Amino acid sequence: MRPVAHSASRSMPHPPEVVRRVLIEASTVADWNPALSSVTAPPGPAVVGRAYPIRIRDLVGGRITYLEVGPTLVVHRLVAPGADEQGEWRLEEARGGTVVTHRLEHRGIVLRVMHRAFEPVPAWRLERLAGVLSTMGRTSG
Image (cartoon, rainbow, N blue to C red; front, side):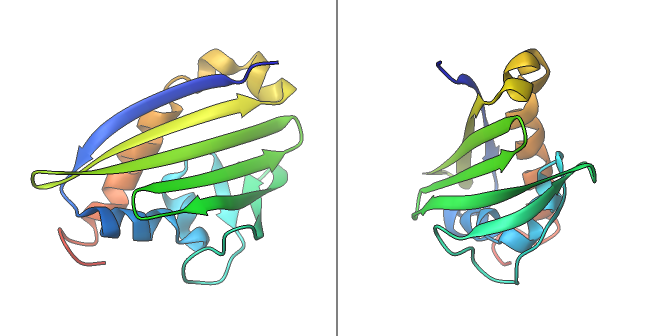
């Protein structure tokens, strides 16, 4: 069965390496991912291939695993009962900052049944990510 995909893009006034740093800080993913209540991970960059325990809305447990971490691409997989999401973050350097494109693919019965409710999720995550970045300043983190 084909996954259901949604995506959004947003310009952010921060260099790609600063955006990337926030994206790969597994311990703070819940700060910008509205579905997550918590991620159990040590501070610092996520280790590719390591699964970190998560809580979704304080109700359901699961895990997030970073599959790829590169200078312009970050890919994660989030798995919980009835849910399987692969998220991709593309960072394109642009005048005055970075264009961040977030694409997600959903598999799993819960996510497929509720696919219309997930259409705005990439934009929500980008908005919250921009908020986290704004608290850090324009070029530092």
